[in-house]
Image (cartoon, rainbow, N blue to C red; front, side):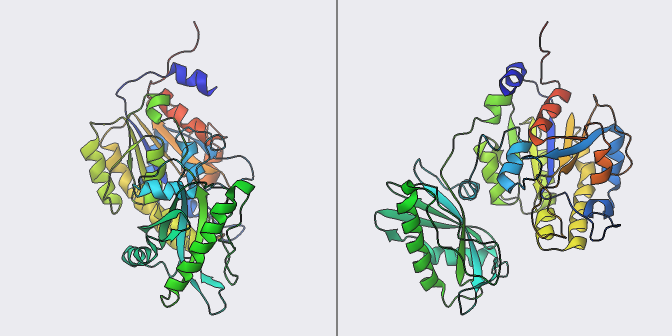
Length: 399
């Protein structure tokens, strides 16, 4: 089906905006309560329903909880199972690190450990990026056997490690248990060809702990997502789009670069993203706007703060509509209910506003209402097909 659809794509200047509230989907705190989205005051999104179709989408399938990279790949029209992306590559490309073939990149979280080595805070109190840069410099430049080690800051408590040299493999298990009150795991090889990489990673962790032992709250590290650079066909190759990403967090810039998007740098928050959107409006025809904090507040378990972030994005809708996009698609990449403090497998609500729609007749943009919408529940990668079709970017099939 992908090849059939791509053969039908045609190029035009009609403009599509994909607005993603990361971790949008939620859960109520009580059996008879409301989700974060149902609780939020979203007058602009609710008014938009009058010219929108709605539904829910699943990034990976029933019962499978998506990470950020596969969640976004689905939204960009890619099958996440066909194009797996490791977290390390997302982090490295997000900061523009020049990865080479054979490099292995790993996401690093600075963390806090007690005197027994048990992790008591997986994010080291969310240290600021400036502190992360200082600590990354402390760990950078190791040489372990014949492998060079690069450590670069990403944002807040997140950094990235790149191993460069012969004989490496990304088939190594994470050290992060994603739990507290337990020690990190050793980096174990998942295949015989990864034995060397696991050994190098273990030596790196050991040396890093020595260098960080007096650096509380960031006296420990967790490694996640060992990954090599994949080849992914670009959005231009597949869909003849001229895409641009307007994101604050490096990881989402990384996923965008992997699918061939241009990336606008130095966007500290939503108002700067909106200003940049208007400035580049004439140069592109696909605009990806990413809002991170709906996800981070969900991971913090802060229901009210996640509601406030949804409302902040709602207030940005008029500025986007003033540019008169031909299609506006609003959704999330996965669910992050504050109740769970983590990503979940729950489907995500979406609305797609365009001239050529059959409005779903809903009154509130929310999970339960969107389930009543025209599309009920579809796969995430089908959303971009709808957006392109409603932007007249897909030719008729057959005579």
